[in-house]
Image (cartoon, rainbow, N blue to C red; front, side, top):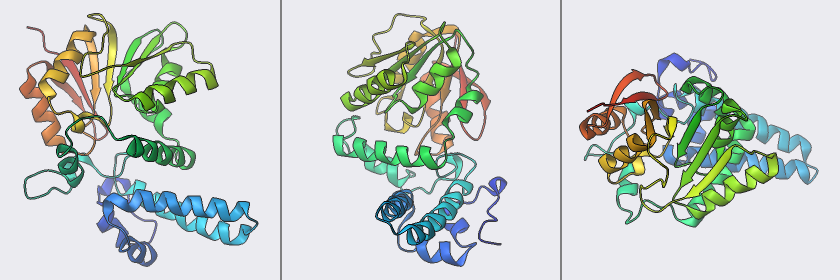
Length: 284
């Protein structure tokens, strides 16, 4: 298989995909799977800095290598974020390494330094591969809807959702992290969004009224939740009876995510893609 021939349909993990090319294989040995994205982002930053310092040819070489590495990383999965959730490597306890580290935390709140690094990495990824707008178009969000982005982070999805719902719609960007709300407010001021309302919460209580949203999104954060049934109960409370929950497992196997959802008794899965799950409230 050639260096760039890691087909999207193959569902290969990063390690197997890296074996398809000599350069990618050699470089991948320098870092493990969890550090590969950070390695790529550092390489890109170095290339950019070299270009600014006048070493444009050298910066261009670094940037070219980085671009192909990033394509390999994206192509290694049918999901935009690294690995397919149903093929994630697990530890002896059945958990992914990321999930195992998260479970050791005493709180679901990400440390400030981790949040800043994550946001920085997202800036680089969105610059190289701006996929968020394309992804949210698959969520079924339409103009005039009320949408809740629960666990909004730095607001990457909230802003894209705001474009879809338009002036007559509303997006509630909810997070437990102060830096997340600050980042969303900065985007509101910078881009002039008038249909995004950021809400800082404590615990799972969204503070929203019952039956608020047509669509509730919980993207790349469910694996952090320590009490999934309590969390899913709150999402059902704020969802309309005919509303939709868009959820993915993030850094946990798809089978684990589905089991948590169904065992909660609050949601039924009616559509499954390689990117996310769509759920309807279970009517009692």
